[in-house]
Image (cartoon, rainbow, N blue to C red; front, side):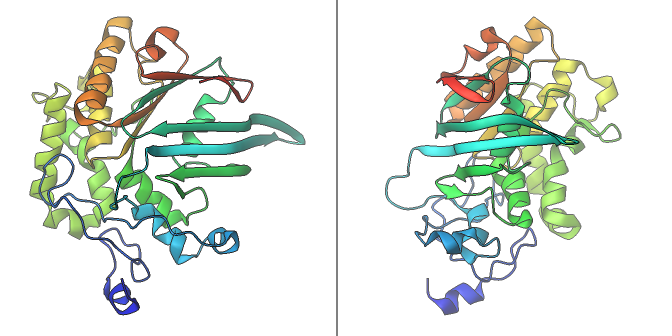
Length: 306
């Protein structure tokens, strides 16, 4: 796209300035799940630039990364990766190493579990992949774009539109109904006016996701009226409402009994197989981990088996 066309791109629906971005045409105007009007901004192929330019957090190359979706030729298989990632935390004068040179990747459509003992760095790695935290060294890449040094507005968009997240303790808003909790990412991402303009499409999408996880009859219930399994199903629907490219799950069955945990795993496997959703799941339960396509084992901040 020439400079004139690039400058003509107005501010995106999420508030990030798109004037320096080169946007490729979309191939699917109805979105990944066929819902009208819920498409994410398309992205261009990776741009190969000198490392000095990529190192700048204000580089136009990095600003386009949060919107990137490969639209050219045969898409690369690698979806999300950590390249020689190190992370430590400080407690006073003491430095506590958590990750010590982790090399990890997941391909498009793959279901990968990360397993290991408590304190081995599983959740830390998941938070780095989600850009909730930044590595001390190494790189986090999404669709072969480096994302750990993308400006904060771009990271917000990644988490709102491209990464769905499930946590062990649900993190539902108690004053909102089930339907409203699922709609929360759209409300946050679009802003008040943007959401109101597309409210019908978003509500339809949220209902579809709640039906998908078996909660179509619980739209008006609040979290205090739901069981633990139903709250986790709500959290899954919330994570899916924006049609994410990757689902990141942190101990999604850890707070549930065996039967309910198996139901949640059935949902995740179905999403992976039927909708080709890429899933990265952290767990300490070997039985749960074995249900993924591949298991990566962390011990003392290092990958010992993959």
